[in-house]
Length: 192
Figure (cartoon, rainbow, N blue to C red):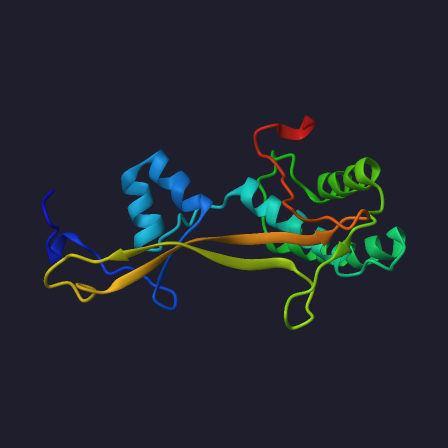
């Protein structure tokens, strides 16, 4: 195997000496090496508005409001969610012909409550007694010795970590622990 030259090897953005790999990074490498290079290594993202990703983030934010206020009645939670949703749909301009709008977001949240009810799970707390909601994690997978003469990292050992975010860490009514990973979809369309 040929050793890469300094010109061929870009600077890699390391977080505390670690290379963080997440599901989006792996999907990028499976999709297209050039895409993965610009997204994962060069940290560039398309400036184009992504309706599905933005809608998913908005729904996550609304669910976070509910999860951070577990003792409130559903109507009180909705009263907190509505200003947030209105603000998000004012700031993020969805195409006029897109089904993802404020009313659709409300319908999704109503369907969530209708399907799952008011949950009886307890949200876990982190070491600072903060709710384990939208919590980042990094799990070391292996150590990599950089072999690229002339590169600033030559000879360094990098910790490669699997990383991501936990939507919500929970304890179920039967005392088991788990985590929730909320999903919305762009593939199902307005009837999903």
